[in-house]
Image (tube, rainbow, N blue to C red; front, side, top):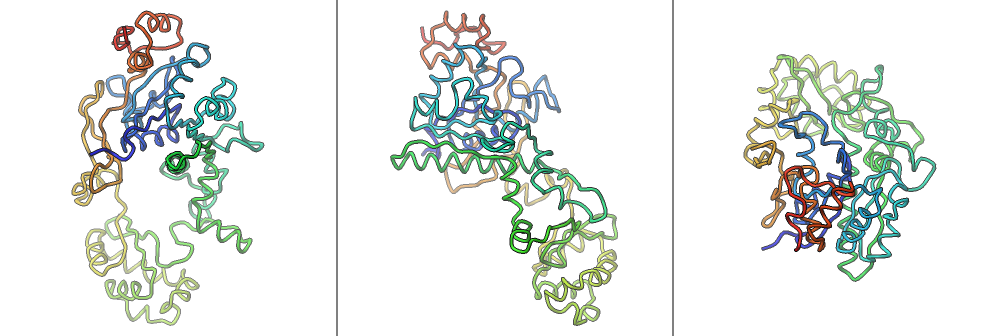
Length: 409
């Protein structure tokens, strides 16, 4: 038995989230991933808290199933190593500033001239073309640019930033989709392709309701707090035990069942509330009926009744409650892995389950340059040459790894 991507070789030149998550997902499915990092500080995420035994838990969470080679790509010898690696690889994923790798002779056209089958995936804030191509872009500023902050929060308050890294993660998923698309093309005897994925366009594309509304009507979507743009009731409600519960009774049948659970059938027999469109048109009045009824319940008891009625709902959980939930435990979402610095650590497994040969964590996140000598040895570099490259600063070896310990004699 073999994982789906076993035998696929991936190079990653990534920082932070988008590029590293893409390469990690490919590694989870069996691809051999080599992470190429700057010699001085490596991926910037290595320095993000929490730091445990000198290593970042955030970095470990984003970079499993990879080996690390540390190269100073400003030096010709390091660029030659990079080219040798590209010759033997199937996919390259990078999230450098557009144009940076081209200046080093490592852009998509340059490397695909050497390896026509190479699938080259570039992730950036605003894309490889256009007036903003060189503009710095991070998750928060891209969310502001792409409109998602404008629709997040209460109508009369300032825009609210999202709680998770939406732009980074969704662009990582589009980058993974791109890599797999390119690989399918190569398997069908086509040359590799260059893919241009931007955080900004990924975030805009994710706004399915809002872009449809604006592009079809010209109406600019506004902040609506916890309400839904189409359905009601479909929002957060406060319960009597000072918690909040998400309830979505979008259909007429679900709404009728909700009124029975809450004991407000008579109040909701009002013609303003009996049909879906009427409920949305009279949402403020409807919420004046629902709010007090829901505040009579504690969150857990109400959840039990609403779930039994077949209506989507959940109390708002913090992460302690998430990981203590019986569903999360039953699915084995949290796994333990051994890390050379962090020790036995808990992490979230790949969220995809397969009938067999599915994603796995077979290698912990690497320390900076942990596999430099090993990878150079696989390229045929002798011990003395590896030691010379380390002395010149073109490469960095792991602090506990003797120069050339994995090299070919």
